[in-house]
Amino acid sequence: FSGFADFGNSEVTMLQFTTGNAYCILQIMPTRSDQASTDSQTRIYVNSERVFSITHRDGNRPAESAPYNILIPSFSNVSIVMIALADTTLNGAVMLTGRVYGAE
Image (cartoon, rainbow, N blue to C red; front, side, top):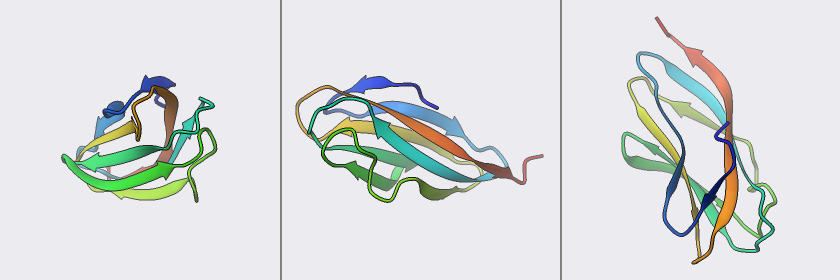
C-alpha cells in the first residue's frame, strides 16, 4: 500500500521496487480519495518503459475493471506513478497484492 498522497499534472511515484531473481504476479488497485471530477492516470513502468496505463474518470470511483492482474518479470525495476490529466491537485493511493515466484 502506497499510502495516500497528493499528485498534480506531473508524475508522482506512489510505489517503487525491484524484483531481484523472482517474478511476481500482482493485482493492482489504484484509488482516489478526492471528490474532483478531473480525470487521472495510474502508470506502471518496468525498467523505465511504460507498460500499462489506467485512466480514472469522474473522480474518486475506481478505475474500470479494477483490480488489474500484472506479471512483473525477474530483475526488473518497477515504478507505479499517478498523474492528474489537468492542472489541479488530486489525492490517491495504490494497493498491490500478489505472490512472488522463484525467490532464492
